[in-house]
Length: 329
Image (cartoon, rainbow, N blue to C red; front, side, top):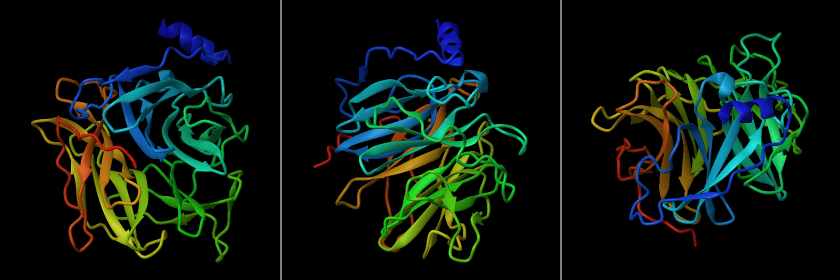
C-alpha cells in the first residue's frame, strides 16, 4: 500500500486524503505520545482558537515525502489531517521533506520546510515554501524553487523557524551542521532582504547549537532555543539563551529538555505554545520510546513549561501523562 502511495507521489499524482481521524476521545489527559504514529520535529501553532501540530513524518529519507497535521480544541482530542503537503504539490522535492515551520499572514497559511538534504551548493534543494487557504491544507508550492538553496556560513539550509516580531517583521532562523543564521523575509515571503548593515545572512550560532532553532518573545526578552547532541543518541536535548533582540548576542544559559531513562530517550527538536492572553506555556517535542531502537521511531509529546521569577526557564519534566485539557477562550 505504502509503495503505491510513494509511486503516485513521485509521479506527481495528487494523493486522495484518507478519512480524517480523531484520537483520544475518552482521555482525561493528552497522554504521551499525543497521537499514534512515528512523527518528529513538531511545529506547534494556534490558528482560529485551535491548537495545531505540524510534524515530520518520521521515516527513512527516501520515504519521507509527505506531511500530516493535527488539530485540537483542548490539547487532548486530536484530529488528523493527512497529506497536507507532499511531492505532488512541490515538484522539486524528491526526498527528505522535514521539520516544517508554519505561519499565517493576510489570510494565507505558509508552510516552510527543508527538503532533499543537500550536502553542497551544487545539489537541488534547501528550504522551500508552500501556501494554502486553510491550515489543514492542501499546501501547494509557492515559489517553484527553494527559498534558500545555498549553504551559507556553513549552515545547511534546514530546520527553519519563522518568527514574527512585535513590529510585524517576519524573520527566519535556520541551520543545521552546528551553525545558525537569521534572515529577514520579504513582506510577501518570496525571498530575503538585507539588513540595514547590508548583511543578508547573519550568523547567530550560540555555544552548543546543533539544529532545531525556536524563538519567542516574553516580557520584552527574546528567548532563543535549540537542540544539541546527536538526534539518534541519548545526549539529544534542548538548551536556551535570552537576548535583547532577535540577533542576540545569545549566550547559552541551561538545558531545558532532555531524556529521562525511565520514560523515553532522545527528547528534543521542539516548539512552544503560549496560550493567548496568559503566561501559560507548553513545550511540544519528539522522543523515542524505550522499546524502540530504530532511529526513526519517534513520537510527539507535550508537557508544561514553567518560568522562574527571574525569567529563566525551569527544567522540563517529561511525562507519560502529558497535559490536562486547556481550551482557548
